[in-house]
Length: 455
Image (cartoon, rainbow, N blue to C red; front, side, top):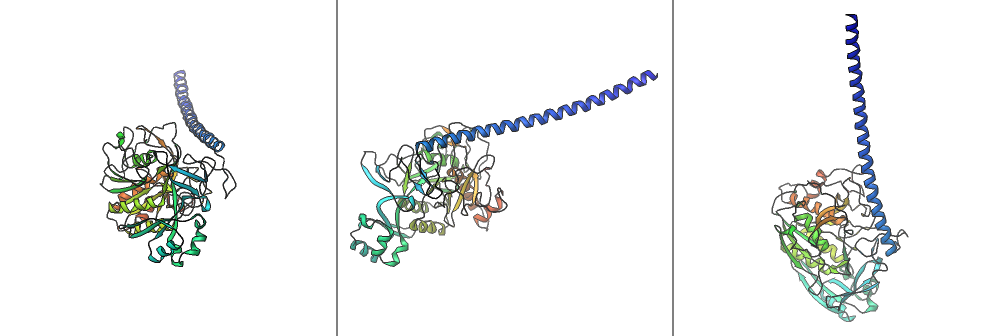
């Protein structure tokens, strides 16, 4: 009997010890599995970053340029070499003829103050009779006098002789009251990086809302024949002119995020009415430009269409006429969301994102890390996914796109749905309440007031 009891006791002890041993082994296996998953994620991230570094290094080798503020080399963001202040470098000459589809010169781009670019010898001014007389006195050529009824602006576009093609010289010859309502016909650029060759499986997302909201887009043209837009309501208007073969890549990608559909693509605003203004002309195979006067034309048209919010995934210099047009647009009750810029952490502000009442969107990756070439500064308002964003491409396929341009539609969708609501609070305050605080506590120059997540 004692032997039987001893056997039972030993059996129980063995079973208990075995169970404990199995638990420990199981826990160790779980721990190893988690470590392996973490290592795998880290290796994949290192490979991705290495690929980006290799691409950036190759760009710099192909297009070396010195940043005048930091005296270091910078990356290219739209297929041509850029400094933090604008487009320069050995792939875009200081004087660049812009050719139409027949090979003739439509106009000439030149490098101007602070390394920005503008149409050679072209200026814009609020229409003013004393000003017109002063322009006639200096042999300025009046190109057009245009009334933008919905903006409440009257502008004159004119060309000056080469010796007068500077602020300093024009101020000597024009009445003092015109100095603050005069500026160049500057050039602006889209804010996306080159398309990524690899395609990540897109995360499943839901629309921001299902209301039939009027939204505006100022961008390149859109490939409206893409299957992604088969069910979309899109009205387009070309402001760049029929003389050019309109670029379509950037606008198609942004529109795809907003209203495009596909097997793996869910629109942020499936019921929206999209009014798309095409303002960009081709500089070369990879780069586009938009004149400031055409941005004004686009803003005026979108106000006619009663849009609630306008997406401007483009950037360039501060411009007095653009600032006034933006101000008039917002005063009319239309919000503006703009890309914060892809010029890098050392870049000064870019516009229109840096205007006080414009909502500036920066880009993060799926792990909430800031896009390495995103601008930073006090003007940054919110962050959203803008790295490897799955969307439509102008060639008829789908793929990943990166840049603050790809984050801007998230802000646009959020603003559109809030504007369609009945809240008495300001749009920005409602966005702040929904944003997730990332980075330093509170508002910071990297993420602004926080992350706006796609639903």
